[in-house]
Image 1 (cartoon, rainbow, N blue to C red):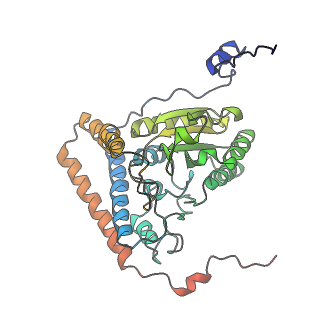
Image 2 (image 1 turned 60 degrees about the vertical axis):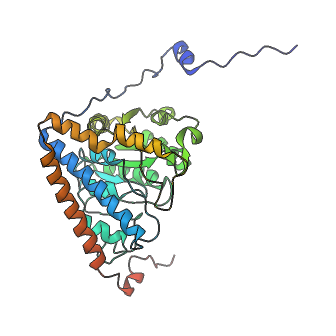
Image 3 (image 1 turned 120 degrees about the horizontal axis):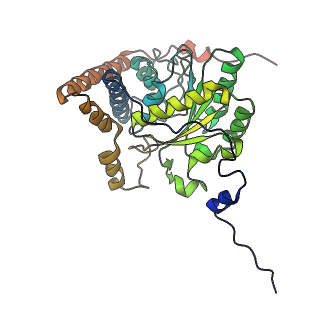
Length: 357
């Protein structure tokens, strides 16, 4: 007769029996609260999110006209993440690195929309001289280090940036963004391990927009509560409403306090949503129109900011004026890009490593 097997305990049962409890007596950051923004700060958050939204809409139009080639991944719907996080950073001191859905992060870090749009259209006036395109843009001045087309590659590079901040003693923090799809990459966990061992000043941000290309996160990830992904490396995680700019900023404040206190890395899972397909070539048939519309109706970050602004007495006329100003900025960026010349042929030979070893 076979020996009876003991049923596998649930996570809660295992933690209840553990002599040290669920968190293994490790110190943890405080539970974040929504950021208490002033009227002026709220207006700036709103302005930045509208800028990203209108810029990305225009980029989509230019792609449809054939003026943007290659891949183009839009950030529409996720604006609160980049704005909420990067509004807490110091440009030129704190470094940012992300994947290929990068236009919004650049705009949120104050980089000129003209040079971003020129780069998208492959013009010589672009921030990477027209040779990087949508996925590969950099600004050493702003400490924005890309824009990376290889899924998850930016996470290990971000750990290197965190190491540089610690080595140089400059007080800076690295924010390394990646998506729910990249969260299953092996190099991510190698980076987690080293970052915790060396107590690097880095905030790992998972932008969980629910779909890794065309596969929902609960179909592609055995552990779909992604803020737990750092637990085995003793990296604390916080799950955040990534559609609420004040929730994002509040969580970022706690994350910065943790990292700047010498505690090592922290992981923020931003529960967000992209309204468009994975890229401009993706018709997004893996989800219904009703699902997308429900997110727009109930959770849109810009509409949510309008509610907060109304509480501060900001009326519809003031918001319309902001929207008009932003549309003018974006239209001028498109005109600048379209009227700028393509890179000179000699640019084929610049920025290329040709040393022999």
